[in-house]
Length: 515
Image 1 (tube, rainbow, N blue to C red):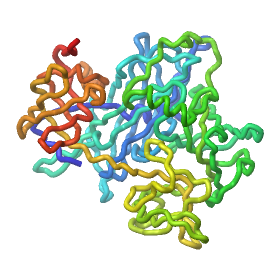
Image 2: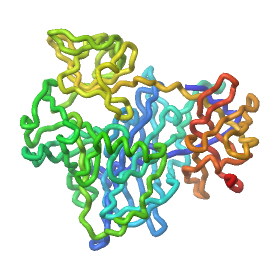
Image 3: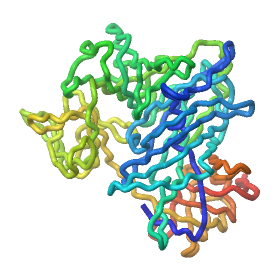
Image 4: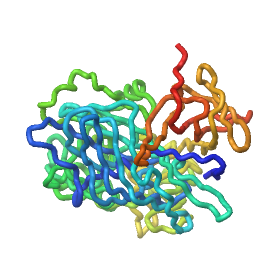
């Protein structure tokens, strides 16, 4: 992680996984505020995922309250005490709350958090100061509509590498927590990273090969349905559309018919609504029609936006892999290509770096069990040819104590590890008329920054009179001279920086784009 010079004071806030985390209104204390009987409602499902970072063993956040705000009022999504490790969400997405809220438009999420704990690689801990007095407001670029016919999933994707910064001073290194979050409002199929849910099998249907997954458990908390009774929340699991693979407690292949009501299982797949399962074709179309991950897909003008009196639309998880019990999740590196032999079938040499209580550096054979599946961190399906020497690999499976083999059923392969971004802090100087570049005045001199008006992500941070920190998604056309800015990007040979993300402070009149 790059050192941050403190010669330019700049504080930016995002509200990342915090929103999700905070809104994990799961069983026990503080679920969602109930709605008035007879008032039209809609479902808001909060999802959280995280970007990778190699600098910490854990990033633990403690949240005491989450609220959803509109021009007409506020709904409490969570009121209690929750503590979550964001780094457990690097390669999959989890559901953290499902809440019935009054139908209507919403435009802000307010979080209250009390602590962030960083667990460093050597086991020591650091506690950065919370920005905004611990109260953070997240403002999507547009409001979003919730109705009974339009359930909403809000995915918050935290970029941990940009969120925690090292500040060097004479007293030694310290850490600043300035979370960066990319928001996506999702209607219909959910198509980014894979979703991982652990729960209990209920209502098995052997004709349709479906079941309900109930008592869903996420990082120490059960998810309820947002009602006053704290009823367990259930997701319908479809196992046909994605040709799900099934495994028993020791990672041996089984069939759907071997499942029983009451079994504790982990399901990895993709979320959809109302039985509309995301096929490869629909995912490809979604990719073509979508914008960046931080975009807001607001379909508030859709014809079905006014169907407030219809029944709530059911959420469905189209499963890829289902396994019984609790499996190891190991982080490591492939040290060979895949080999096939009579005793093991397909396997490769695997060096374990962390996870499962196994000593770091151990090298063992990792077997691709029949029916196992391989994906990229973003959920793209891969085959065994993607396993090659030196590819970072996460394996979910069971260690065979007799043979010493790791029997894997789910593999996440980071075949294209992105280069670590450089960071610049300074004051924006001249901006080109077409907003394709700008000068950033830093403590070490002026630097040229290249901007993509379609790809560069831009956020504004501001503080209210009561010191709440507010974080809003903007566009490159909102940049202007004199703003304090923090820029992340790729350094080029000529010394300029291709901007990936720009966060600036509020102030001054907005510059309008050229016609």
